[in-house]
Image (cartoon, rainbow, N blue to C red; front, side, top):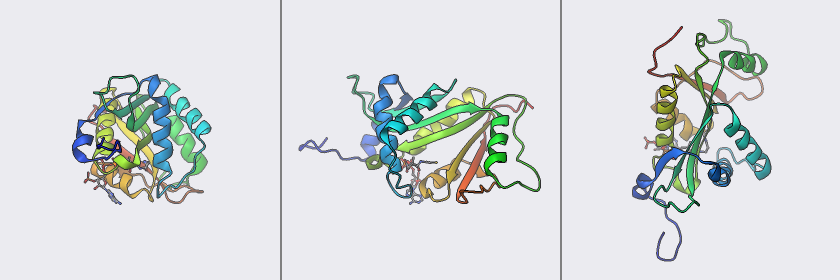
Length: 204
Ligand SMILES: CC(C)(COP(=O)(O)OP(=O)(O)OC[C@H]1O[C@@H](n2cnc3c(N)ncnc32)[C@H](O)[C@@H]1OP(=O)(O)O)[C@@H](O)C(=O)NCCC(=O)NCCS
């Protein structure tokens, strides 16, 4: 905080923030950050807070889902602020194929091959950083942390769906070694599906 109590985000303050698993108390802050991040360009979404909360609660309730948040770990007063979040959960190959059948143009060579021996595809549902704190490395740290966590859980493949319009997110995914699957959606031509192998040993 500055002397007048206003907040200024900077790299050294951002570096002191910690990435840790979310607790149920973080939900209101998770909703706030989600709404604020998607209200900005290129999304400019005016999401309804009640429905957003329901959606995020649903994500948190998926078995084996993970939510990591950036917080000021030093605060320790039970009202920690959330600066960023990443939400993931395992999905099965069958769920991917079901989605692709439903929303994508068929590919002449067939759908991309997915690991079938285990249901260990880590799917990134959400990545968001509070707008005043964007550009200070928090998104990258969240992505690194979730990749490490999912690799530790035995995921062979990490996947996500995003939009080509989200230039910053696209840059981050490319930096972290994600590549696009050659999928095109019927109703959302700018949507892209991304994948990255982990270092976990392949089991099929
Ligand atoms: C995507 C998002 C999470 C990134 O968070 P962040 O904290 O700003 O990310 P970082 O600071 O770690 O990294 C941003 C990188 O993009 C670069 N960048 C910044 N603006 C950019 C732009 N307009 N175009 C391309 N790259 C850009 C930064 O230089 C940085 O790269 P660097 O690590 O080489 O310096 C954040 O922008 C966000 O919440 N966006 C809205 C929600 C969203 O789009 N989520 C992803 C949906 S799939």
